[in-house]
Image (tube, rainbow, N blue to C red):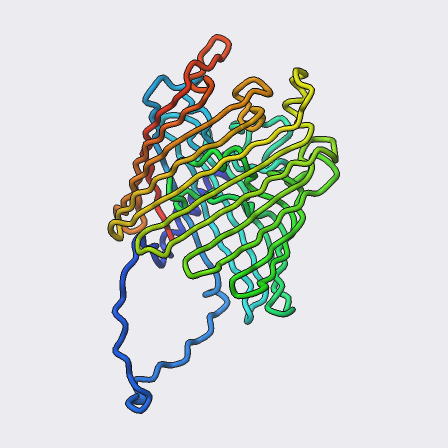
Length: 421
């Protein structure tokens, strides 16, 4: 049954292409403004008609894509041809990454209700990105571990409803399952500057939540969002207490966005104490033509961390981690873009990666260079080189004993995706 549902969903996504109405632009263009007309010189036929309000259907945003990739580890890849400390590109070789269909509508003054539905799937019988996104309780059980090969090849990534309450500038309430507020990078590969995900995306923050949010625009440049959630990547709570998340979103000047995101709460199974907290800072600047700059900084900690507690080798079992990732991308033409990411992450007690002995510090560095070209309409190709390094041997894990033998890892990736909308 799971195999049939996965195949039917992929067929539906492919069928969606027949109604595709537009292709995103990858560069910026300069438009010549019309010559200024003085009020006394305006002719009746020159006066613009008032813009018609959008219909309910026009307020919907459709998004759909399919993605395939090939990842080659230039050294001797780890156990079973794996790329260590990766998330979606964990398996070497060919991967049908994901097919996604999304429909979303934000609340508006005319239609104060909103909603979002995001469905993803992969090819049955293979490991794919959609499996790694499962929340506990939705296509994933307590015994499923990364990379979740025992789970279905499809996922309900988001399903929520929202409503704009006419209080002041409009108080928006949102409830259901939705993607986390934290992080610079997102699940959808086409919306990222690079193909592979950062350490911060993979190890520092959650993917999705089930819960409710309130959002209010205090001023034109400052919005507050806060709410309560079941926890990190869980739809069925593993304890009996909620977690709390929020965002302070600033746009102090044109083309500059600064978000301060946070989440805190107990995440360990069967205990309502020992909270896990992450402070997440995201900065984006697009004020220079064709150039995108980004910065993501995270700091997280957890008291009486379960991995350290289980090791039985330490008296102090509190854990912390922090890191930063810097991004720069330039659109040379409307079709061609290059992007660079430089990142550092400190897993101070080894609890987030769990590739070094419990309590041992792990320092991680990576640099990623990506070239992207719009081949035809919605078809985009990317080639990427990534170099990973660490202060301890955590790469090139070998049998017997699954012992790490290297401090570095280099991969080359070829990625192709097609956007239907």
